Amino acid sequence: MRNTLLAGAFAVLLSACATQAPQPRMQPPVARTTAAPAAAGVVLVQEAWVSAEVRGEELDSLATWSSEDGRVWLFATGKSSHRLSLFDGDSGAVLRTVGERGDRPGAFNRPNGVSVFGDLLFVVERDNRRVQVLSLPGFEPIGAFGQDQLRSPYGIWLNEVAPGELDAYVTDSFMYGARFDELPADQELDQRVRRYRLDVGDDGLDARYLGAFGATSGAGKLHMVESIAGDAAHDRLLIAEEDRNRPSNLREYDLAGRFAGRSLPEGTFDGEAEGVVLWTCGVDSGYWIAVDQQAPRTHFHVFERAGLVPVGSFHGASVARTDGIALHAAATARFPAGAFYAVHDDLAVAAFDLGDLVQALQLDPACLH
Image 1 (cartoon, rainbow, N blue to C red):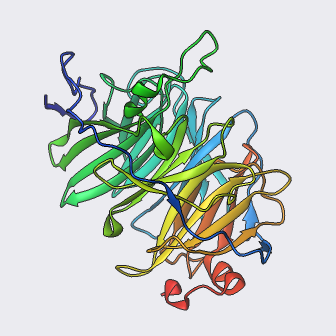
Image 2: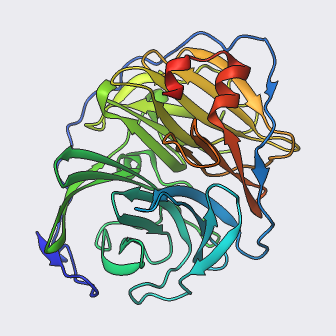
């Protein structure tokens, strides 16, 4: 079941006879929620900058990378243009685009989720049904994985389980019908998240499919999924439930794929739950930031890391209809306290100074160090 991905060429990672690892059938736990958010209102935090508009891209997800000379690159996937837009993380200047439509190495078809580990860039392609891996800073294709299982992938989260060894969690929001707007039957919802073990070494990258998960009954069902993020220190995944016919929320699972019996507080999201990121401040402390996609202004809800207790919400002066977000906690020339990035209206990206967030929401000053 293991195939090696050599630099500069694609290889089929998983054989056609690959089968999903057996998943235990368990009764879902009783759902619970944390306390409702405080009714203190949503705080205005001014954006440090909003980039120029890049029309025709339909920007979705974000990730950052730091070069050896200290530059910060901000990547944004372009769903309609089938490529990546690259921004300067300090100034918001548009630097270049990468890729074109296609299925060859280095090309993309409806890229959505994006993530960075070290000098590797992971791009989830919905319509190529794969996760493509490229080497930074040159964007050389290393390979891809998931082609034998993924049907309509969207989001990705990477967890380092050993030096050079990752678990990749990929959401798979496949649908049915002529317009692909019909939900799968409940018994198929156990395929909403797929997991892969990746070995990163000098010879390339190897991938092995570890199976899929998702509750098929109860409050933990994932009808439509996209964003996903995790916290290994607390054995936690937060997965966005985006079905507009139900209250949108973030469901909590553990890293083994079991529903933890909890979602974020009912009524947290007036719009649609979208991107979510973890802001780590030490081994055990920090905050979660979750997108509440709205117009004319997106709301961002902040939760304490360990207990998911709401600590406040903020919005920018202009940022709206946000999909993806990214957090860069390391100091940069423009942002010595780090930066928080958000997509604006599918057309641009915006940056917030993390120091401004700490001050406005009275967060732990230790997160600035």
